[in-house]
Amino acid sequence: MIKGKPFVKWAGGKRQIIDKLKQYVPDEFNTYYEPFVGGGALLFELSPKNAVINDYNKELMNVYECIKDAKKFESMCKELNQHETMHSEKYYYEVRNLDRDKKKFNKLVDYKRAARTIYLNKACFNGLYRVNSKNEFNVPFGKKNKVNTYEGQNLGIICGFLNFNNIKLLSVDFEEAVKDAKKGDFIYFDPPYDSDTTTFNSYTEDGFGKEEQKRLAEVFKDLDKRGCYVMLSNHNTALVNELYKDYNIHVIEAKRNINANGKKRGKVVEVIITNFENKREFE
Image 1: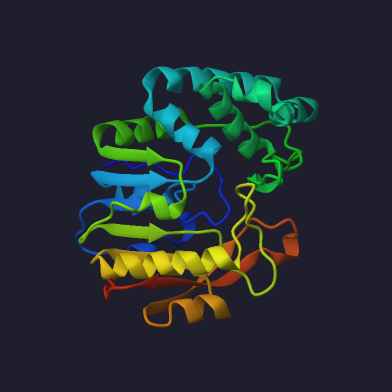
Image 2: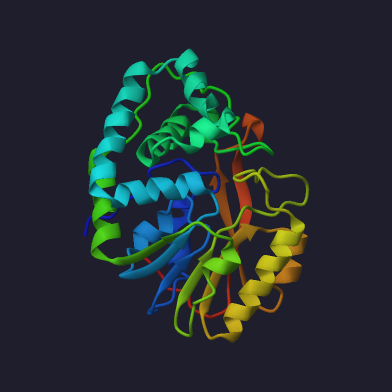
């Protein structure tokens, strides 16, 4: 089976540690839940028949909705072709600043908003997705002369996956996203990461601080009590180790390329936390 791959570059994306993640996926499960889906690396790798995927970032989930809808998908790709043709620094800032006029922006048709999200992700500095307190995209221009915004074949594979399986798309709070999870379901949490210093987590205007990390740990515990399989990724911080001390904490090395400071990119220590024992060896 040909699998899809992430169509955006997302901070904390999981493609380069996908084999490590797969070692801890349960052998069998019912519905797959991913409340912080982002680029969807593990989702596409597992390609489950039944899934509930969610992200609080409404612009990102709008892209998933448009890829799923054949007509909107076609219109979005035409828009992306136009963005590629028009691409320049001046044009980038014109597209970026569309969300400064909220009234006008909210009237923009969904496939145009979806194309804007992908174009900005491909053309901005280092593929960041960051918004300010007014929920305005504020990443500077990436200084690329040309941008390749999408691979038609990959988006087609994702379109098929979303349509030929039972995949529910949401854009709500992570706790709301898993409210219907039952015994035997598998939930993978990939939240904005905790940090012992400071960290980039402005995917939405609200950010994701220490209190949110604590609330997430409570949701993890509740799902554990319901008999769900739960897995979570995060940085290997003091808070994370304290919050999940009663569970299986697997320490791994990962390479991270999204940081405004190039010297801070490179290997970092992360954790994969599970409430079940399962480590499969892959050749």
